Image 1 (tube, rainbow, N blue to C red):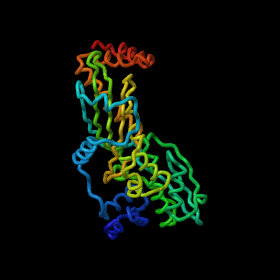
Image 2 (cartoon, one colour):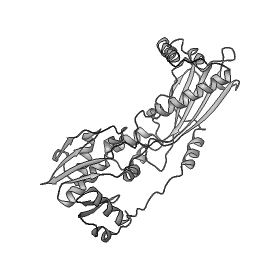
Image 3 (cartoon, rainbow, N blue to C red):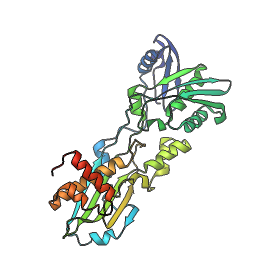
Image 4 (cartoon, rainbow, N blue to C red):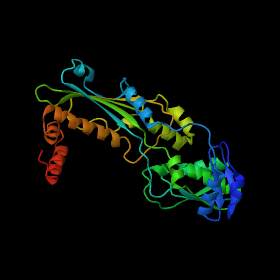
Length: 338
């Protein structure tokens, strides 16, 4: 927090107080609308990191995916299979950050009295929220009573707990019960997105069957689950969490990257990239981008081979009859005719 005009907030009817921290400033009032108007009137200014350019991030990740990473899955001898370069095909995918944007923005209610905190909050990690709130106001975790309340789906956004720390500090500073509700703007600014990703895929087709005999996936992205784990379990700041995860391979960042097909030689590599932004879980997590890239590449390989994409897949599922039957049934239901 670099600056703000508190006098402007004082002119808003119903203002109960202004509370500031290193990273945020809050206005409390008789209604949420009055509090929001007071917050806007202060025109808070923040120093620190500037906005990132999406195209620049995509370039960083695309370049990183050109280099070998840490091997997280291996079957067979991929490098030997790819070495001669015959019938070898490549594809590159850039996955943008994905935001949570739940219908309900973050909200919590707190009461601080006699050195104890009561917290009403919808959280996917209530004990972590309880610990974070206790640390924020300098009391023992045992002095915090958390009442879990129902909430709509958040796509894992409510694994984060910034608002628990914030509402606890506001309640303590004002000496009265308070309810904090983020605006949509605040929610979009505060929540970390699912990571952007650069994926480089390479495959070799058998010259006889025209089916893949080698597959390599290089996935360039931050070690999101290590970073997120530091925030969730160690209550680390975003900067400290990124530093703790820097350069570390994260198998969960590559979850779903091993294709479900009978390919003799498969390698999956994670190329850890440290970005000047925090990243987080989002429902579906890594398979949301690894499955998209893998199946899109399978479609491209089928076209290269001049094969129907459904039959191409079935040709690789001889040892997975249940999955093959799923595809056959989906094909019938969808009236797939090639």
